[in-house]
Amino acid sequence: SETNATVTALRGDIKELRRENESLHNELNEIRVILEEQEEASNALPPTSSIGFDDVTTTTNSSALIPNGYHGLNWDNVELNHRSRLPGAGYEYGIVSGDFAAFNADGEPCSISSATPFSVAG
Image 1 (cartoon, rainbow, N blue to C red):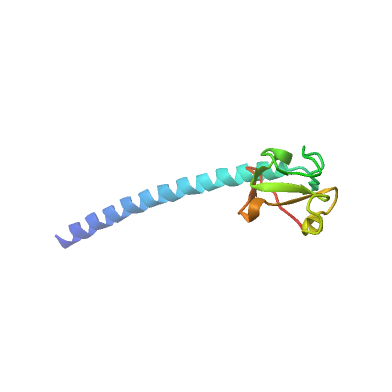
Image 2 (tube, rainbow, N blue to C red):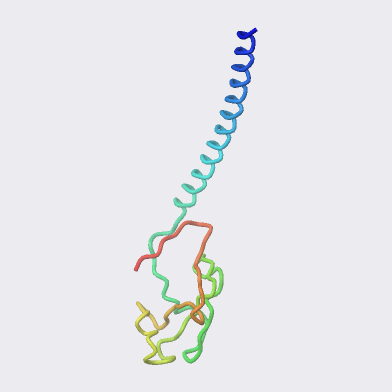
């Protein structure tokens, strides 16, 4: 009968809604775990500090790639120039303190990343 068909259809709808609810519940739990991990990581961040590059091993007349792990960050294609190398080329304007300027090597894309959240000011 028509009533039995309606009841059967409604039962099917209820089953589907329960599956969707369970899926949403699982996604919500995954988001909670991610947020908790991010909160733990942000609580572990050191206080604000500057990176001056003066402790990177290079000479005054050469450039050097910044090694991965330097100050706990991943450096990809970021190079240093000493202020006395290539005078007048503009690198001296990128020096905030110390003797080195960081730049993208050969004008190619570069990146600085970390599993721990960080920000760049300036």
